[in-house]
Length: 110
Length: 193
Image (cartoon, rainbow over all chains, first blue to last red; front, side):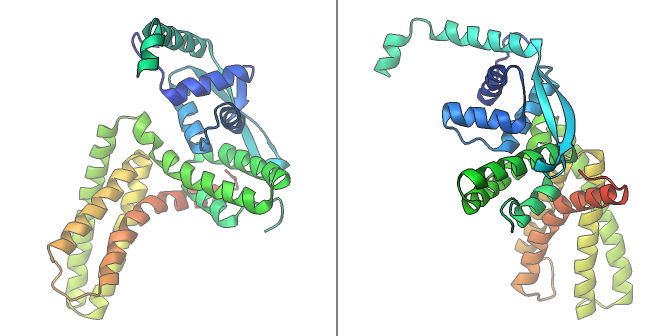
């Protein structure tokens, strides 16, 4: 991740979801994890568009599995969190921690 | 519709509009989740959910190449294709005018056919070069038709639905043609997405 470049909010949430799912999952598992944890009804299109962007940045990788009958003969695309993605999460969370340190009193006032 | 099959129209929409690399995995994910929801809730609730996902996912997936790539390049490609297609339409229009006198019903029909042919070819060429360019080409077509209607360039009196047809069908043809050709090519090659 370039210095100073932060993850977008959905990028951040999707990387965290992949981390929670042992580092690899397909799009719908990621979508379900986000919905269960945050109550946010994200569309599958948004999840795939973001995962594709994260793949371009080298934060995740993907591979195509075998087609199965319960998926109407369609293959699964499995996404895996990469070391660069873990580092991006660390950098992003460190930045947020630095910016929020000592603000608890003021946030109540807001 | 059987208990385990999602709404056919929503599937069609997704099949035609989702870009090829995402089509199979997204359709598979949605079909799998639909079956789970149909069992745990009801088929109608699962269908509503499926429609909701389809409507929200298609525009995002169509526009994702714009966000991911360089949109200046997409605009430049769309503009070049637009100029080429407009020149083609003018040339065909001039030839047709020699055969059929302007103002006659035949000329109005030819005009519509030329327009749709030109937009279909434009959409296909733009998508071959860069998928994101088709969105800009569709916008260019829509703006041009809107301006022509507003300026009342056409001297032949035409009903409102004819003008509205140009305004809505033109951009739609630009966007749909690449998806249809892609689908037909996959079918001809004997592959499914």
